[in-house]
Amino acid sequence: MANDNPSPDNIRAMLRITCADAGVLLSDYHDGTLPADDRERVASHIGGCVACGVILEQIHTTTLALRAVGSARAVPEQDTIDRILARIHRA
Ligand SMILES: [Zn+2]
Image (spheres, rainbow, N blue to C red):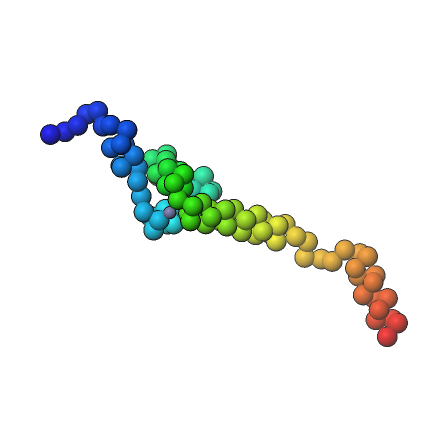
């Protein structure tokens, strides 16, 4: 018999995913590119799973670090060049 009015427990059960499922989706969840239903499942899982919450935090930290590297200047500052040249000339 079909149940047209699932109880809150049934809804929670439908939203439940494993850590492996969440792990596959975490990066896209972090980037905000998941479809709404997957996003809800992952959010619900993270709400009750410390391990996946830690992984999400690590994804966030790594993303910030990569952004910092990406925006870093490849050319040294002028005072760094001057200091290196001064050392070479002193040698
Ligand atoms: Zn988990």
